[in-house]
Length: 111
Length: 119
Image 1 (cartoon, chains in turn orange, yellow):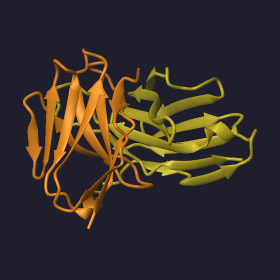
Image 2: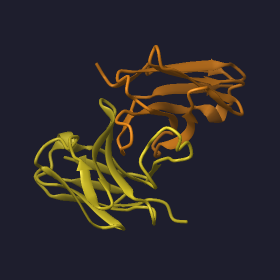
Image 3: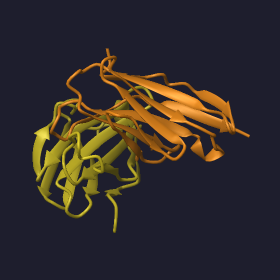
Image 4: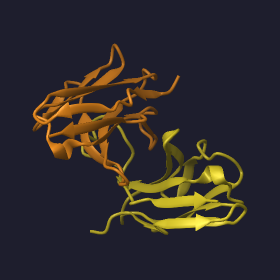
């Protein structure tokens, strides 16, 4: 079983739609969680951190469920520019530098 | 400020040749990471350094791969001899500190990647 698992998609949605991605992680000792965005042929970039209480940044909402060991990302009012691959990222070893990346979920927003 | 700088951006080499990828992290960052990305396996951590010291190299696929960080502003990833299955995008990344809940603003900054093709 992979340490971080995501549905690869692709998710094809129309502009303005709401779309949600889920991610599960296997290590219950994981402490830090993030969503990264990667555009085609580009490097990954931080989209947002995921806090225990859940957090929102504009049209993006991230949730963490420690009991079920999953993380979610909700995108409201999708824009064409949201088309990208979204990577779920977990720091599995606490206070160290090791980030584990999921395979990513591809989103395609269509006009 | 300059971001993470990698070179070369693209390299095509023949099987059996030595490949050296270079990285300059963001000034002042204590951590440096080498990742490899392929369609099949996604983004894999190969090795990371803290204050120029290798901390975890468990992701290095085999002895053909080696990485060094002789000083805080430079790192290399070497493949010798290269094989076609090494074809991938190799990302170098750096961060200011390790990852711990509460350090909400910390992140890892990636270079643009070195696109390696071994034929």
